[in-house]
Image (cartoon, rainbow, N blue to C red; front, side):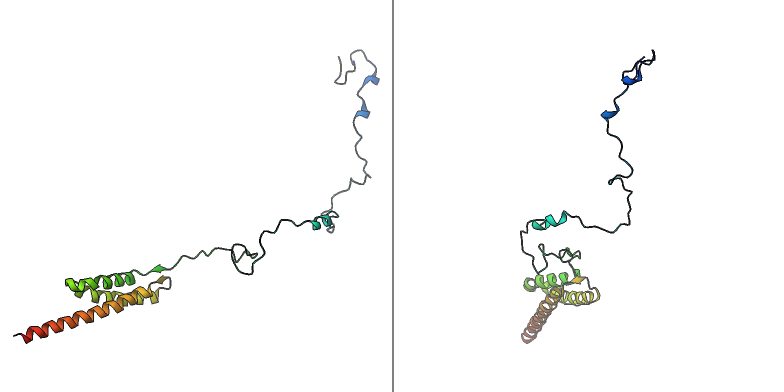
Length: 171
């Protein structure tokens, strides 16, 4: 019977034909310079090769730094997008403007008499809601509804008074 190293063990062969121990390096000695225990509390020592990296910049600079916030700003907090939603437009102020503007041609078709005062009332309600709700906008639409609706209401009242005066004058 033979070993893994080829020696015949059954006949009590010579052990001199065993494996060659010079083929493998011997383990390092305990006092070797590279066989030191790791101490996590040793003070930090700078890398001696780090001085060579100063000759080359870490990356090429494509754009000069800008003092203004934007996509090329060096400050990452100035580059953050605004996550607030734009203010919502008040529905009453939009309805006031639509009613008042539709009442302009409606004056000549006899339904503007009803729409113009509705535009004024909706505009006043819309201004009150915008004042109470800071996340809504639409001041200009409400004021447009109030002014145009008020002027058309006065115009309709003036036409009604003149028509009634001419009707009574003819009798």
